[in-house]
Length: 303
Image (tube, rainbow, N blue to C red; front, side, top):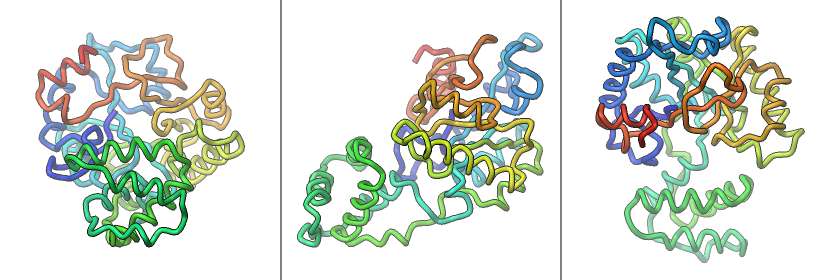
């Protein structure tokens, strides 16, 4: 399970990226010890019944969120080594300049200037803003602490807080670059025959925080959009739970909506009897996989 492949000098969450050089070393290792296939193959050829092929276990590379830097940095390396991968797309963000709230907060934190808390009249927003403004330490520590704190609030509150922070910190949120893939880039990668795509809902909200009607809408609307864009065929439509959060009821809803399998963020390998709607993955990021030895230990489950 990857998220972003970007140069290490980018100021993003530590657990969200690997550098291009690190990712290339991963590809070399995986190509040697695994048969790398697409998620589509797992469905179309009932891959869970043949976890090992030619003495090598199967491996699937997945990338969450549909970041533009996949096209810039990861895709050229996958072409170089002729290895496939699967990307999960939050359809509301694709082809737009919208941002995840976590990235908007990082942008605000990085560019903040003198604070003017008196600009905030909403007492509830003011309390949250005061806490975030008081964060100290390194940028990484402030970012991680702030994001974990904000996760305790509903998205509607978080969005109000971000607007408030942009006012008191004098930061224009419209100045951010495009973060997500567009449909032309997606079409090009489909044409390569190496990259397949799945759903990551519409708005990337954590499904366990929504009621059943909203969950169904997220599942149905995302699937419809991706089918309309010819991103995948009806025979293989995969799904990824935002933040990995799900329940048995939600997994059943995913299946009944017409998806063929779903992946979680639960760590581990999948065996032949695995539930196709709660598949495990191994989270990969720079700080614990920057060397081949560390990466091997991570894949083996030692760290």
